[in-house]
Image 1 (spheres, helix red, strand yellow):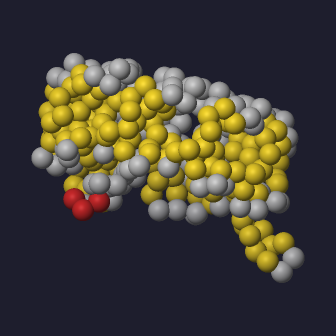
Image 2 (cartoon, one colour):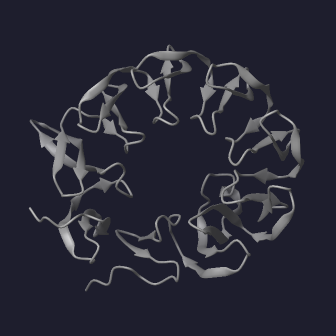
Length: 324
């Protein structure tokens, strides 16, 4: 096994391997799927294996040295978050620690990753929260919940959305038709078919005037007016005019935008069709919309996928991996 440290997954002819920081292939492509980046020292890898007379997906954890820990009994596994990885065994969920030991019993109907020392879990068809000892600290009484962000979590009850604190008490009672997580002290919420933003006291800070709205990131939030997307600042001022067919939150100083996507799919989290590019916070296009599929930037790189192959670009749009 090479002692070179793995850096990024590479997709060739429908299978994933790994390169090092010098773009050398350290592990030849052989996996069916891998997670996008290493988290807490591990990357999730999967492949198809014949076990007896059956063929099934097999999940494992690849560390940055290339050592692969395979668990034949896992139905699925998630990236590590706050030192724990959510796993599924025989249709139930629990958690492994970074030593790949089971530390929270496999007993939940569903579960999220940990965020702010808590994870949401589903028990008897209702959602609540546990701590890292697996103890229920907010009873499962909700129809739907998100992860905690900024000390607050979005929850649904009786088809309305509100927000609770870490004691499980409502700080904003359920009254919204739909809502986003808090970010930078504000949350996008919808009332009477229009979106606006409220603070943690539930006070309206930005008027309910948008057709759609996303969360703030790096001081700006994507908003939609008349089927076109732009950006507002935390004062509600439009700082990048709505001219895009779709727009995403800022990450690493740049945001993805789409031109030419299928209008019928723009209600999805990611629309179908069109081409993607990147803009900066001044609204200047930094990478032209020429990409069919691309991730957000993280640590200076974004992943592009073209069919059964991938690559990475830097913030100048230059291709990272130049392989023959």
